[in-house]
Length: 415
Image (spheres, helix red, strand yellow):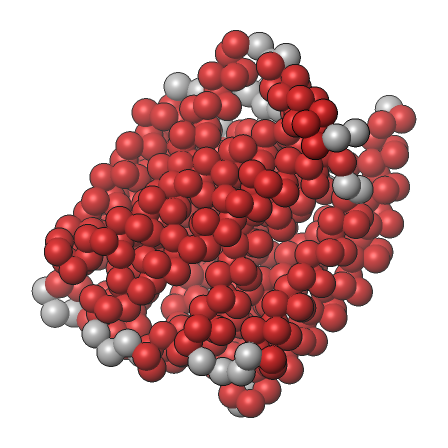
């Protein structure tokens, strides 16, 4: 089948959806656009504040605090989501996020530099909770066939927001200052509330999910779920080691907060541009026409080649490190994220609920906490070796994972 024919097939799936389903997808896409639009503004300002106030070595500590904070909020979220509509819960998260961000920022501005930690931590928490809420609702509302078609375009819409946010950060930080940029980001977060609030209810997790805890819902599939969690853990080891190395180079290269924020805006615009191209040019065809097992195996191989060419062939320096970081994060936001979501379609709806909770909400952030502790303790000359070992372990984890995926997918289709 030609590329044109494949594109027509993808388009026909979208056009076959009912009017209300299309409207919901547009609303969720717009919500993702706004969330990723806000994120470069919030991430650039809070990261710059942390690095300038407390130094690059504070990054692992901030990641540990983020893991602890997110674990607490995930536990709270889990209790409420059993009884509360996702739209209502999303509204509360967005509202409280804007309030706490404003309070923490004013405390920091008053001269209490220690509040750089809560600002950074809240930045890590809000994006995970809000994006997870949208994606969880999306997964409960569409079939696997539709998911393979819409993940790319929706992800591209989110990346477009990230590009715009990065460009605005770079263009306006010197003119407006960090404070104006920060509160612009808060305003954009608030705009997500009406976008998501009017989506329809969806049709899963439903009564059964409300009566079960996440761990109870994965009885009988624990091996598969823990293998997904292991893959997520190792992938985040790789990505966050790259992030840590980037932070060190950034802090050594730029001394003032405004310069860091401006450069970070460029980096996040580049990350989202890379992600956008992958989601438009590669992802729809990759998910639709390439077997999941091949896609999953190729992802760590691409990370390995990026690490090899960026680090060993081109040597240390800000530019090789920046390019490596852009590719690492861009792949995480686009191809890896979408390919991982497809693994859940080997499970029933109630099993998806528990599997995503364990792998995406707990393990994803736990990985950052664990690697942070390791980075605090490990000598600097062993960091590249740690990244290489994590890549190899990731690849080895995929073989039993993909075997289980095929088994569960076949069983689900037979029912």
